[in-house]
Structure formats: C-alpha cells, structure tokens
Image 1 (cartoon, rainbow, N blue to C red):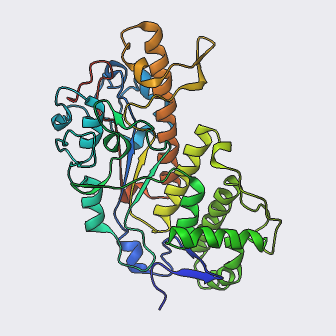
Image 2 (tube, helix red, strand yellow):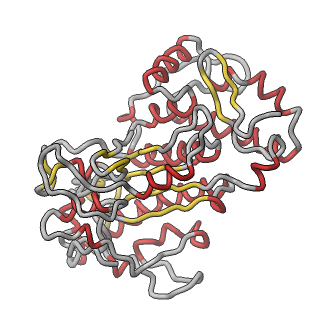
Image 3 (cartoon, one colour):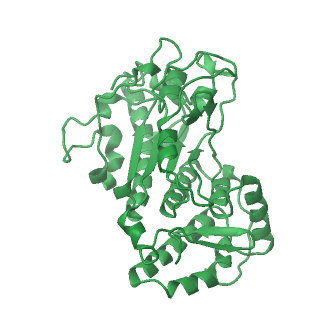
Length: 379
C-alpha cells in the first residue's frame, strides 16, 4: 500500500507528491483543510475598497479592480472590527501585533514582548499532518526586518511579525524564495537544505532529476487523470526552480548548472509571485497546510517607483503617503499601490484555483487597520 503523501528520495533530496486519488481513494474523499493568510501593510482608502453592492454580483471598487480574474472566488466582508489594535499611540505596531491574535500587545521597546497565540497557529495545531517531513506552518514575507530599534514607539517585533506560537514567541518570516524552495523540496532542516543545494549545483543536476526514474515507475500505477496531474505538478516544480535560477533543461538527464541569482536580482513583483508559486506548491503537495505571508512590514516605508500615476513614478515612501489620502493626487497613488498589491493576491488565488485547492482552503487577506489616514481599526 502506498502512503497518501508519497516521497521520492535520492542523494539526500526528497520531493513530496501532490495528492493522487489513484494512490489513495480516502485522500480524494477527504482532502486536508488548509489556511493561507495574506497581510497587506498600511491599510486602505476604505471608500475605494468596500463594494457599494452586496452579494456575489458585487461591483469591484477602485482598489480591488485587479480581483477581476478571481472575483467569483473572493468575498469582501465588511463590518468586522479588531479593537485590541487601537490603544491611542502606535497604531501600526498595535494593529500588526493584534492582526491575527486579536490581543492588546504589551507596550515595550525591549524584549518583553507579549501578544497572544495567533489564529494561524491555532489552526496549525489542529490541522497539521503528523507525517514525516511535514512542516507545521510556514511564515513568509517580501520585506526583511525593520532596521530601527523601535517602530512607532514600540519594538519592531510587532510590525515585523504576524504569526505567534505563544503570547511571547513571534514566528519570524523567511523572505528568500531560494531558502523556501530548498526547505520544501530538499529536506526540512534549513542548514542541511543549503548544503544539499550546493551539492546539486556541483553535480549539475536538478532535484527533479533524482526522482525521474521513480516518477516513470509510479506513473504506470496511476490512472490517466492522475498521470496528467503528476506531469503538471512536476512541470510546476521545474518552472519554479528555473525562475529561482536553478538548472534549466528537460526533466530527464543532466543539465548545465547555473549559479542562482541573489534574491536582490529579482524585482519585487517577480519575487512575490515566485513566493506565490512556492506557497501553492507547498499546499498542493501537502508539505504544509498553514501559511502566513507578509507583503510588507507594518508601517513600511517602501516606495514603489515601478508604478506610475499620470506618467510619474511613485517614489513616495508608502507610510507617510497614506497619511494624505484626502489629497486627490495622493489618493491616486495609494489606489495604484493597492491595485498592485491586490493583483499579487489575485495571482496567488489563481494559482490555488488552478491546482483545485480552493474547495479545501480558506484564504484571508487584510491589513493592520482599515482606513489608512485615520488609523481606524473598525471595519
């Protein structure tokens, strides 16, 4: 009998397979439940975010127009408050600390942080697999830790993390897609993963090449639909590997190893989309069932010069830009940034839909506050 989460292993590398009904009818009848959380920093202009019509036929407002390709799969829910994030000063660290904990954080600039266990970790405790190699939860992001010792009168620990395994233990995020890829597909120990990645490059071989013979054998045991799904899955892994600077070439045989580019060589949009590819693959092959992703840190000062409004690049720092949302010119800039952020989210939802994961996955997107200019935590 072949286990539901079959593994191929070779030369220290392993690849988890997607769920294949031909291998396990029980798995097909009861797919794992999954949770993915997307955090977007600095709030929104709410009058451009909340639809004016209700129901499945809602009209997309200005900030959400990029949802159009997946609109039928997304509900915009208003009227929810997270008031523990509103304490008078430091709305960004308070709101980010309360984002998934719904807890009033301890005001501190030191190490005595305190929030609460976050809802993603509650979910992970309930739905994580006990299979060998399964990762209980992944914490990912697109921006490194804040440089300053404090962020808005609080320690930056609150603005840099949304996942908490206990009230005093934040779960740091990984921002390098290559490290994520190695952890998912070359072993669960991050240190061993890097060593294995170096070994693969030295041998001029892809991690997929180790599994080729086993895949051909396994394919003979599958029905037509599962053979197609297996081929699609292997192609997806190969495409991600190539986008990360891995070894291009056919799935069979050896190929010329190229040095992976530094993460900084990826533009921000590409890096986020590669993370989405990895998250979809991680859920599809049941390497993990719970993922949190921070598109940026709370109160991020990141600029967006690759976006334009009226022919001009948006070079303003994002956080102060949101404080002038009443200015029509700045409102255009904020909404352009919001559309880009939502487009990245729509890409991720589209990947899950293509992998037939939406029926068993809850995907949650929000920010640490609602209205950016007023720092509101209601709605």
